[in-house]
Length: 191
Image 1 (spheres, one colour):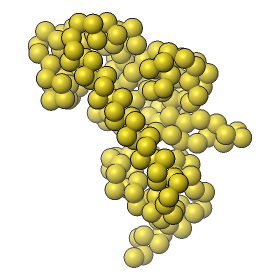
Image 2: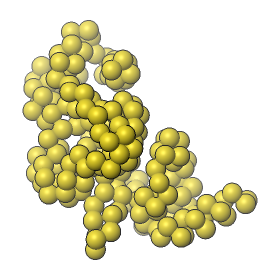
Image 3: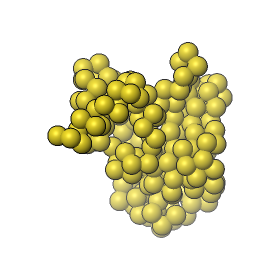
């Protein structure tokens, strides 16, 4: 909780009373590894701040899981398009490992937007980061080789994600076969 308070204070300059308004709307949740938090086809009613653990979003294509986003300690996650529009999610949110999170409902966030423009700023910052992530991923997927995709991934993603996310999930995120990722990793470690 102290980490979330610190992040919000730095990010949007929350006062003590604004923090208290925010804090009372949070619910602490614990998820075991492999727990499906938001299922494809359901509505994402909550935004999550990860205190500890690793989560991912993915969708199914021909019965195969395709990872779309990863987040770990001190990061926010949801099925963002579903959360923003309050419509059915095209993806699933899953705990990769045992995780402790703070949950904020869509309704609570919209109430906070009315209370202070600082919370609107938080919403804008999260939306901008999500947009930039999607645009970067789209460009990477369309223009880079398997090796370039992986090098870009390890350069731009949190080291904890690189170390804690299983390689087959990273491979689907990068749009390459797990065997190709193994070859790329071997090639990088040799050079």
